[in-house]
Length: 121
Image 1 (cartoon, rainbow, N blue to C red):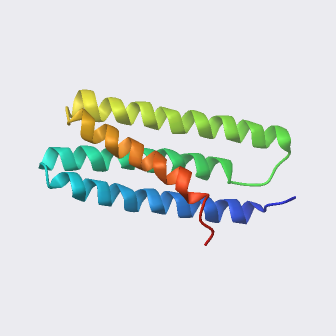
Image 2: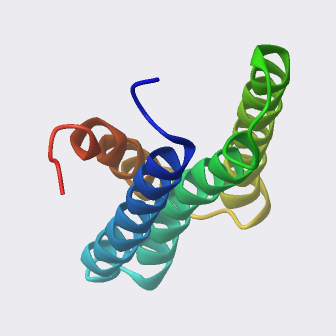
C-alpha cells in the first residue's frame, strides 16, 4: 500500500481548505465589481468545495474491501455532482446571480484541484 487512509483524509482536508480560501479570494475580487458578482463568484467556488468535502467525507469514512471502496467512490461522486449541479441551478436560476462571475468561481474552485497535487506540504 503506497498511501494510508489518514494521508488521503489529510490531502482532502487540505484541498477543501484551499478551495474555501479561493472562494473567499474570488468573492472579494468580484465584490469590487458589484455585490451580486462577488456573491456569485464566492458561491461558485463554494459549490466546488462543498462537493469535494462531501465526496471526501463519504470516500474516506472507513476501511473496507475493494467492493465497499468502489461503492463509496461511486456514491461520493454522485453526491459531489448532485451538489455541483444543484448549486449551479440554485445560483443561476433561483438567485439569478451573474453567470460569468459564478463560472469564474467554479473554475477557480476546480483549479485548486490541479495545483493542490503539485505542491507537497
